[in-house]
Structure formats: C-alpha cells, structure tokens
Image 1: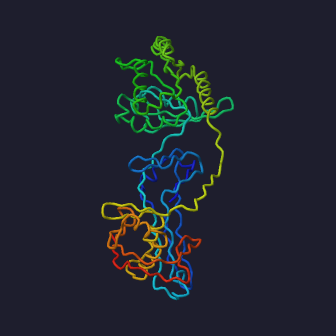
Image 2: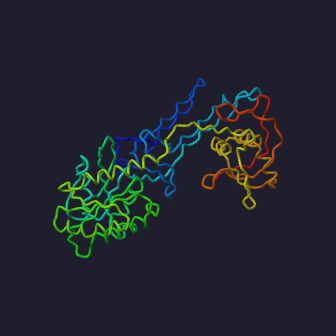
Length: 417
C-alpha cells in the first residue's frame, strides 16, 4: 500500500469514510514450473501536507511535495515451489516454501495545511474576510463564533511572486488544551512561514481589548508548540472602517510597536491598509524562502559490509530469542506440518551461523529457542545438528542447498506458537 501526494486531493475525507484498505494478493504457482502472479499495489492519493504517524504518535512520513510517495505497508516475499529446491540428491523435494504474508499496519493520517502565511486570532476577528479580500477565495463569512470550521486557503499574487494565506479557526482561551475547536486546528500554524495576528478592534464584548486578545492567542500558541516563538509575526488591527474600531486601533498601535510588533491598521471590508499589509507579508515570505537550503536530488549509496550479520540472538532468562530478517522470513516460509520442510529450515539456520551463536551464549540440547517477535514467534526445543558445508544464496534471496549437500538435523521437537 503506497501513499502518493496528489495536489488535486484536498482532504482525507475518503480515508475517513473508508479507513480499511487492502492491496491485491498474489496468486500461487502453477503447473509447468510457472510462477504465480504478483499482487497489485494499492496507491492511495493523499493531499500535500499529510503526516503519517503510528497510533503512539511516532511520525513515519511527512508528505508535502506533489508526487512524493511512502510505502505504508509492504507485500510479502513470494515462496518457492519444490522444483526450485531440488538438488542432485533430492530429485523431488516433498515440500515447498510458503509465501510471506504482507504487512498489516495501523496508521494515523493527519492533514496540516501547507501555507506561507497563517492568520490567527479570535473567532469573528475577520480572518476569513481578510483571506477573501487578499485573494480570490470565497470563504463563508458571518459575525458569530466558529463560522469557520475548516481552514480556508487563499492564493496571493504580488510583484511577480505567489504565496498562500490560510486562516486558522477556533482559537480561544484554552485552545491548546483542546477547548473549542482550537486543538483541532492549531497544528496548521506549524507549517506557516509567518503568522499574522488579526485583531478585532471593534468587538462588542466589553471584557476584551486588542492587546489582551493578542496576549491570549500568543499564550495558546506557545503552550501548543514553544518552537513557534521564533516564527515571524505581523499584527493587523482589523475593522478600522468602523469609527470605534479606528479609534481603538490608534490607541493601541504604539503600545504594540513598543513590544516589537510590526503593526498595520486595516479593514478587510473597505480594503484600507491591505496593500501595505500584503507587501509586509511578501517580505516575510521572501525572507523565509531565501534562507531555505536548495533541495538537490542525491543518490546515497550505502554498501553492505561483507561481514554483516543477518541475525541476532538474545538470551531471555532460560530461553534464547533469534531476531533478523532472514530467520524470520525462513520461519514464515516453512510448513511446520512437513517434517522435510522443518529439517530444511534447521539446516538453513545452521548454515547462517545461528547454531554456533546459540552455543556461544550457553544453549544446550533442549534449550527453548524463539524465532521472531513476541506477537508472532515460533518456539522449539533446540537439538544441535552436525556441521554442514556452506550454502548458496541465490539472487532472489531464497536460501538453497549446494547440490551435493543433504540436510541433516536433530531438530525433531518443533512447535509453533
């Protein structure tokens, strides 16, 4: 299952309503030494800004650029038929290697708006109106709290440069703790190059004032993510088209400038001051883009050391756990109801060096050996086998005996858990 960034997709609603996805299964081999068909990939389009996480919050991928992809769940390796396991001494093996099951993954997908400028402020401060005035976006606008239930994105073209502006809804006191809608949308500010405080200078709520509103929003931002303290900011004192609003803006402008803010007195309705605010936004966007490192496509080669070990053996009390890609794959491929297949598995493990390592750690005949992770392991009582000649590992990654070798093993007590 592959996640692919598609700029024509703008939400995760399809995955929300259909959260269980299955890639195609492969088909078994056929007569006449013919391979079975491979399973088909399932490509799931996601919007730019999708973050892939584990249920515990570990970030697996941050998908931003169109065309970027991430393999969320890989398919299993195919098995081998008995003809592929034949040697000069074993003309007709009575067993085959099973195909591995594909991965099953639980993941949490979260969409963070990708915008250059984030507009923040109390509900009904005029953020959506400002997006509409600066761009061709037409968000729903009204004068009651929480009109905006999803971030609105607008595209601004100015002086030959294009940048995006998004309003971030739902910010109220306690938003960083999940009150109101803030906890749902605060994450959208994390991607913004700069933030603009949109402050309502004509609010009808007598207990509020522009400076107090700004302090509340600042406190919520820093409580949510302290790294936002370094994000460039502007202050837009909105609604100066209203006489009381213009008077209030004049009263608090100098006070905010003394605190280090760049202040613009604007009206999203009459468009007064929007040109100056737009160029101030453009300056911050260009400064952010200039300091970003130039992305270059590089191919990094990491040769595998010739003495690399394909497994690890850990002692766990009186038992021994074997970890590693090859042992786990071989166990999954083995039919434990077939004695010949079990002997073949034992021989492969011996040639890999597992037996030698078990002996070095103090394993004796009858010791409990566990192969694989705790939730999907094979447990058996170890009986050391005799020494064999080296195996040959074919190009497809499946172990195969040299033609002159016949597996010999003492592992007669094997059980699966």
